[in-house]
Length: 183
Ligand SMILES: *[C@@H]1O[C@H](CO)[C@@H](O)[C@H](O)[C@H]1NC(C)=O
Ligand SMILES: *[C@@H]1O[C@H](CO)[C@@H](O)[C@H](O)[C@H]1NC(C)=O
Image (cartoon, rainbow, N blue to C red; front, side):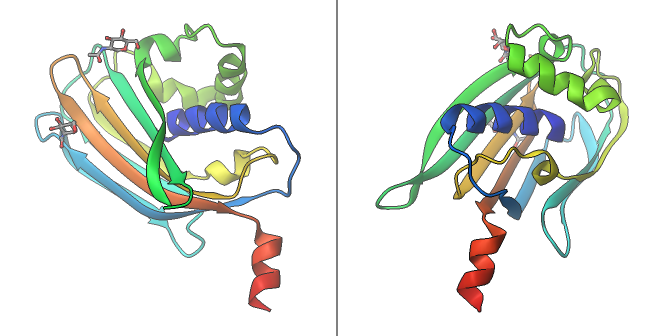
């Protein structure tokens, strides 16, 4: 799940900006998960303290999923009101995606970079406990991103029903500038 989030975020952000900037850090503010009890009996969605740069998730699936999709929405503040505006909205067939059938060269490279972690996306997705510890997206961020707040809504759905809905908020910041501001 988190790998998928990273892939989409990287693709989006990589397409947004080409100018070289300082290496930004990411801090998560909120991470909420709402699960469908027909599919998931227990879950934990947590931001790893104290740095808040990583998230962890644990999901106990009680049903196999032969087929599942993810919808991914990214929101960023719109100037000047700073209210969130949707900047990306995609619906991806995870089973096809995990097999590398997405026709995007950049995605192929990113999926390769995940190596065996990518196998948690394979289909059919059998029931059981799935653990995604200490997902640190910031470690993998390229150096050319804009400083910004953002919100992500990611829902996973089987053809029959929504399985899990997640909402994440966070921000990207330049640690050097931030230090300068506070001293
Ligand atoms: C997830 O969100 C969808 C669309 O907003 C909603 O229809 C569905 O009931 C939600 N599912 C859960 C498990 O909350
Ligand atoms: C799953 O994603 C594929 C590819 O985007 C789309 O064609 C299909 O309609 C989606 N299915 C559901 C149930 O959302």
